[in-house]
Amino acid sequence: MKTAFTLLQDPRQNKGTAFSKEERDKYGLNGLLPNVIENLDTQVLRVLGQVDEFEKPINKYIYLMGLLENNETLFFKTVMSNPAKYLPLVYTPTVGEACETFGHIMRSPRGIYISIKEKHRIREILRNWYDKDVRFAVVTDGERILGLGDLGVCGMGIPIGKLCLYTTCAGVPPEYTLPITLDVGTNNKKFLNDPLYPGLRQKRVGGEEYDDFVLEFVNAIKDVFPKICIQWEDFAGAEAVEIMGKYRDKICSFNDDIQGTAAVATGGLLAACYYSGKALTDQRFLFLGAGAAATGIANLLALKMQMNGASKEEAYDRFYMFDVNGLLVKSRKDILDFQEPFVHDMEPNNNFADAILKIKPTAIIGVSTVGGAFNEQVVSNMARLNENPIIFPYSNPTSHAECTAEQAITWTKGKCIFASGSPFAPVTYKGKTYTPGQGNNVYIFPAMGLAIFATEATRVTDKMFITASEALASQVSRSDFEKGLIYPPINSILEVSVNIAIRIAEEIFDSGLAGIEKPTNLEQYIRSKMYQPVYK
Ligand code: NAD
Image (cartoon, rainbow, N blue to C red):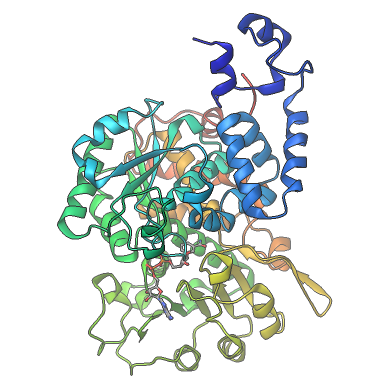
């Protein structure tokens, strides 16, 4: 039932000063609002003025999240009006600080928290959620939040932020989305001693007990929301790989840190190959970091190389990885199963700059979480070996980026092809201005979400991610590339995502994974399923 109270307190129904005269009379809203009747555009102006008043991004974030809790339509209208401005505020890099301080800045809770102590009542907890046809759950256990490590339940800022991007960047209706945190404790000592930490006050549970909990969660969510797609988010490397592998054939699910990152990196590299005239199969990659993101990117690139005609051996031969203990080589005893395909029969090497001279990569990709690791020596070595070295410092947040855009551009004398995980401001070098591209997963997962939502897909395959990366690369223009961009401008993200979603949806129908009949006009159908930030 609509009452003045529910209309003003329910963020999905609240229109604030935009309630019409008729609505005010009908629902008893007269006097509860100032006399003026405004439209959404005027309300957006007010939001803009207030956001700009705050100096610190974290305060802008707190204000915007408050708005989301108060008036969902106005929030999305604002954020969708200028994604380049608002995405860094509602997601990376600001969300990193939001998670680190989550227990202190938390206002009203959002999403579902399931603690391992409540393993036997997960269905009941999920049924407490307000919406009954949830299609997307972004799920984290908070163990590896961005490059910030174990933040326990404070990692909830990530599922909340990511789901905002599903809507903002691809028009997935928010009422189908649900942020979830699995609370298995934390090993973060600072949090365990913080009276304001809002999670279980115990060390992380691992092993069989953890695996059983995740299994029980998957079974429960399938029962409660049969059309669910799970996006596994910010699990630690080994768990991330294991969970993704274990459930990908059992339930519609994917891991954005692995598969989304892989597709966005592949998309950028395909655009770079196209415009620089060097085939993908002629590139040689050296990764700093050999975890979930690195192996995910390399596996997808290797698949794409095989689709382009290379044998499996030829493809994998083009990838080298360096982790905290040095180059992945045969004599090492600490190689994990998922790293095996990237091990080479070479001398051990603990010096990344030196490994570059030996391996002669055309591209270095930083997914190590080590800020500054691509130092002048590293970048200069790449410039010595390559006319246009590919330099991707992908670690987040900004403080963890392996180098800045300015450093890469200066140290390669403006020759590098650059993309980073966190955004960097334009750089002017010798009179030319370069716009650094951001290899932001936001180019992939919202579009994947829209395609899955519209087609009711039953599984998420690697081929769908390859299709997404090809569709992304095809939207980079020569003029983007000449400005330094290997991704389309972020302000066109909604249109870019729709185009990607259409291509993914084609792939879903072709591979027989759709839950619906193929519509005659796929594009029109997909557009008709998209959320519009307008008052109803
Ligand atoms: P992970 O924990 O699975 O892997 C980290 C890897 O870095 C491990 O192999 C570790 O051994 C290695 N490492 C740590 N210290 C090192 C050092 N000093 N020298 C060399 N290697 C070192 O983490 P992940 O999921 O692979 O993520 C890694 C980073 O990539 C994070 O900062 C994350 O934010 C970033 N990332 C960015 C994007 C993106 O921007 N699109 C997407 C996913 C991940």
